[in-house]
Amino acid sequence: MMRFVIKRVVQAGLTIAGVLTVGFVLIRAAGDPVALLLPENATADDAARMRAALGLDLPLWRQYLMFMADALRGDLGMSFRQQTSAVGLVLERLPATMELALAAFAIGVILAFGLDLTLRVVGSQRLRHAVLWVALTRQAIPTFWFGLLMILLFSVTLRWLPALGRGTPGHLILPAFTLGTYELALYLRLLESSFREQETHDYVRTAYAKGLGRGQVVLREMLPNVLLPMVTVAGLNLGVLLGGTVVTETVFSWPGVGRLIVQAVSQRDYPVVVAGVLMTSLIFVALNLLVDLLYAVLDPRVRLA
Amino acid sequence: MRLARSRLFPLDIVLGSALLAAFLLVAFGVPLLPIYEPYEQDLMASLAEPFARAGEKTYWLGADALGRDYLSRLSLAARVSLGISVVAVGISLVMGVALGLVAGFFRGPIEAAIMGLGDLQLAIPRVLLLIASAAVFGSSIGMLMLLLGLTSWVTYGRLARAMALSLREREFVLAALTQGASSSWNIRRHLLPNVAPNMAIIASFEFGQVVVLEASLSYLGLGVQPPLPSLGLMINEGQLYLEINPWISILPGLVIFALVAGSQFVSQRFTPENRGAGLSRVPTV
Image 1 (tube, one colour):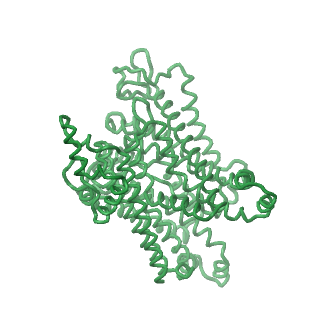
Image 2: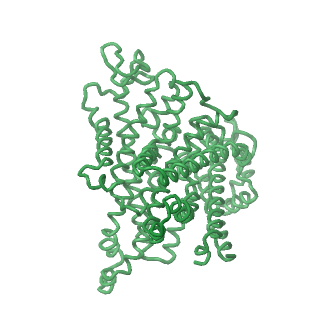
Image 3: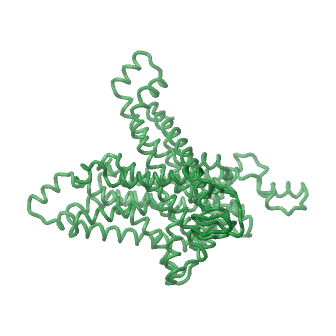
């Protein structure tokens, strides 16, 4: 077990180093920030002094090492537009994004398991396939357009819910539902393919043969086997979820990291863009590490392999 | 289910083909009509609702804020979005297959480097990677195609490598090698034809996702730039007028849906059942 943990942690560390390197490349590719930062009447001397202060006169490899060292201390540079650290700005917005992501994840997972298991145990197969078709259709609808339709229906036409901003629980409903239905579709289809895979195994036939009812076979025999791989896939899907928040936040003016990134792009505030992207990726890598370790605890085959 | 499978025209194929046909009609049929004028402005017709008349003209699907015929705009935007997505899928397909086959055939450090790059790319959510690189490198149409292509190769690469790993041990490859065939000849003549069908299936699934990604980027203002229309951009512009004329944001979404759902419904039919690859493919936004 210890060997597996160490191996996986080292792997995650390498990935993080790689992600940070991508951030460095992006920042450097964005060009010389001095022109953006200085007032128009600045002299060439001012520009040179500023470059020296930012360390831009050093050779590239030293800039890279400085960037990595700063990043390890939690410093990804200063925002061009606001005189605060880019990481600070992102951290400020993180709770809003987490709130939205968690709510959407909960809606998706709870509804998916509830619907799938209920229909599998008591419902007809036809009904379950109809639900799957709806899920497939939802996946073909871009999230931002789905969000707009929700606003149109529930805010503009019915005037039941607020469309924009964050504050009351009512504000959370539409964005969480918009993103949550996407998660729901994802997990419904995953459950379907996992169950279909399990159905081919002998133990299912044996269970039926010894007289167990459908409810017992599905919930007690198959569900544990379905759950395990779902844990891994859920971890990978968190990337989709985190990416989805960017678009959803923009539609609903939800003050999260995604909206911060999009706004920073329009202001050419590259350190904030890169800090937002890097920190989201780091959360994603960390969660995946957690999921993998959890998986190893649940399934001994993984850590022995 | 068995009944549905045995029928000559299964529901998903019929529905998918109908949606695709509707999309193609809008994209390539509308320019043949006499009303096709995607750039002609008439402020009298600003935000006209569908079938509204202004002066001599009837605006079948209304007009946008600048009074441009919306059906014409939709048609042009449909072709722009389609073109970008097709080229982007082409780029990622070629890149993914080439890198995957090379990695699987040669193994060793080349394989480690290529697959490491792929893992790294997967560690950054695709939308975010696209936003950051579009912000830095700009979003001309060519750059958009390139960025969408470069960020989407990993799916192809992983499967191509996995298949190459087993193919390279097969007798026909070994036989060719013993007779002096070069590695590149083997990759081209022996590996490529064997992975091609699976790669085509992946491409058909990826296509819908790339369409949605392009639309999302354009919606965020990081994709296609005005005055050229794109479906995502039009939804963004329409959001301002949601209370006055909701059709402006509804219609482009319908066009995207027709293309994405159409291609997914049709391509779903070609995924081997039970593999789950099709059903559980991880879309992007």
